[in-house]
Amino acid sequence: MKKNNKIMRKQMKSNINMVLAIGMILSILVSKQVQDTLLNKLSVVSAIGIDKSKAGYIASLQIYNPASNSKEGASETGAYTYSGKGRTLPEAMESIENKLARPIFLDNTEVAVIGEELAKTEGISSITDYFMRESNLPANIRFVISKGVSANKLLQIFTPVQKISGSRLEEMLIRKRLSWGKLSDITSNNIKEKAVQNRTELTIPYIRMNGSFSKGTSKQNIEKATPETILSLDGLAVFKDQKLSYFLSSEESNLYALIHAKIKKTSIITKCKRQKGYVTWQEVRSKPLIRIKDKMGIPSFLLQIQLTGKISDVSCKINTSNTKSIVSLEREAEHDLQQQIKQLITKTQNKKTDINGFGEVIYRKQPNRWNRSKNNWNSIYSTVKIQTDVRIKVLDVGDISS
Image 1 (spheres, rainbow, N blue to C red):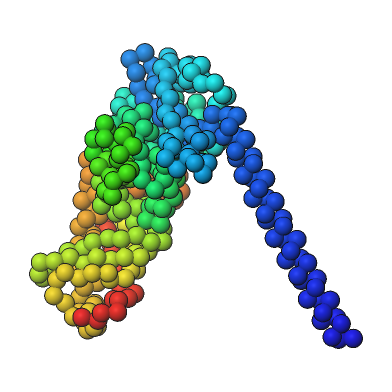
Image 2 (cartoon, rainbow, N blue to C red; image 1 turned 180 degrees about the vertical axis):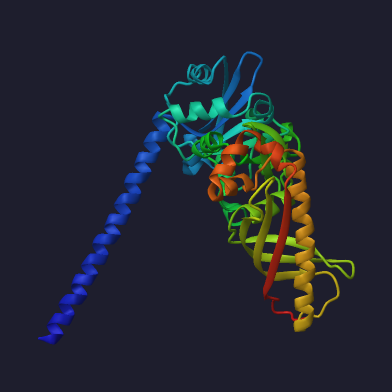
């Protein structure tokens, strides 16, 4: 009897596995058929670019090329970019639609690229309003700024590995979550929320084209072992009153991320104090905390940052198997990081852009004080005293002890 029950259970398990396998195969076939139908009957948009023109706007749409998905389409272009001008964004979009044989499908759009000139002169508020009003655009579209090149040109670059530059930008932003946290995921809702709250200035990732535009738009760019023109996610663009003010370098952006949010995994470099050389820290985790130090007058702050990380490389002579040497290395790293963070904070104070959230802390901890200073906060922020206290702990020195 027990033997029969065991056989029945085995048969039942086998039948369940077979049903699940058939279900998975059917779902894959159905999803592929739906995808092929979308690509063949609609102009499916991967990315949107928006630039400034004399009369208004230049909109650019990067549209999937269905032929590139077929077995015979390995050599086909992954996407085509169409552009149109208009006094308003809807008018510019309509001028693109007039050039296409198929209806535009916006629901699959991944990235919105905003031209540097437009972000500086007109700002981003009106663009955000359009994205929030347009029901066909998904709410989770990530925004980036194109530095040194128009959004239209940026979307025309051939990128290696990923045929479609819009999808490539999406992949780069997702990868940056480890080192930047939520700073890499800036949507229209995030932008609008910052504008309404008016407590912390906006930052948006920026993309730069490295190389020649003419070579980047040639298919030969991705046929070489080393592409001559590539796109790179270099840092964060800082806004003031919803207009682009300045750019943070890659190093500054990493430091800002350590100050601004809990980071799960990033890399930093610190100087050796007693001799020439550097220490590379990897898998660094941060836990920042901002405290208000006084209760009256102009506020002052204490910025505390707790870091943990692994030593990846040491170019100065130090015995990493010695406990005292490790403690000394930690203290040197803390001192160097404090200096780097002070320089970054001084830069933001000189520019009168509170991107680190000091105003947000006053709003949450002392709302009455915030109500008295909110209309003039950027000017107040430029004069406040900010102390930094950095603590770093070595978790691992690697397999080589010295």
